[in-house]
Image (cartoon, rainbow, N blue to C red; front, side, top):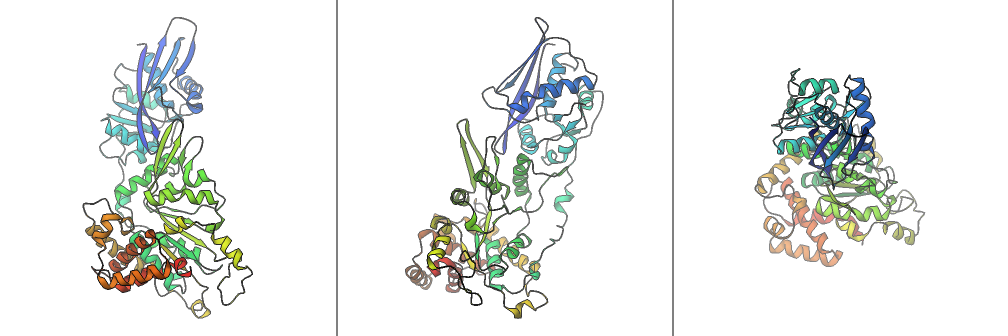
Length: 510
């Protein structure tokens, strides 16, 4: 045989598409090796790794002119996952594998010089593509086997090296498909090391967190240094609803593409909590780069993105947040095409009221003038603030609360209320694409948030007093819907609207 084909896959965002590696060995002419099909640096370097691995595993290719094509040839191929399929295609073209040995199998993995098989990122999307193409099986490194086995209906074989892959494809060794350990997902979650009972005082902020977690609302804490803003934010995952299986798959795909999964980790089981430093670049926050990869907003998908010291972030990076906050996804455009990454997260941010941090604090004198305060707050634009549903003041904790042994509310109690409200929303929005109150807009907002004449008069007064934008008005209605759900009440009342307005702290100050 002079021509052989092996199947693999390449990534486009968090999705994968099939790549066919064609290897042709011609006995005429001087020995050479040519690779075509828009192969990037790591793919071109695979020649050296593959030839060394073949030699060290005892496979000798005959002297020949070797041509390798990666189809489709007009799309760039990146990464080291093509080592294993390239080696298999070469062995097939040299007649060292039976003619139909590679039919229907997808292969991916990096080879060491000794032929050992190493894990690569992006295996979960590749496994989904293989299943969609009705593949006979997927051959990957043992380090990726548990991750790929999450995909039901696909036989996944974890291999230790090239020699084992050849024996399996030649029918000389039988392997059992990897089984995903479903008990990992179904077993009770390990208790979080943090708990809201450790937060003394700040009952108003805890209530705001409960509302935010119940409805998926974005949240901004505003308060002096040491008031507990970061402490509160880090405990938010302890009260959020657990990940469903489909949500866990979405999150795992992003982490798989980004290479963020731990060794042998098959599935992300808890909601992400990402807390990037304020010096992060635009590409690090939103995603992109010369070789585009997911940013922090995508790694926070279905979880929490916490931005501490919000005004210290680059203004252009914050402005780019507006699209994912509105659409739940990020689109990165390049000359070669566009990639879309999911970015449906709950934004939690914290900031001081002024550069020195003590503006409005009764116990400390503020060293900033009004001009400095206005300049500091102007770093966060009005359109971005409008997209943050809740703007909650977190004052300094009085001593009588500090001397208490523990807070009056713990995470378990808050979580039970949040889960009850989420259950109400799941029943209400059954059969619609809406999952939480924070997604209500347009016709759906009018359908699910009807209010009476008295409530309309209250909102009209709030609008005239605070000068609310149309977006802020929408967010007040969404929050009121969530507050009513927490109270297990079908209709939105004035007290629900009043509490929602109270969570628009910066509007009230204006």
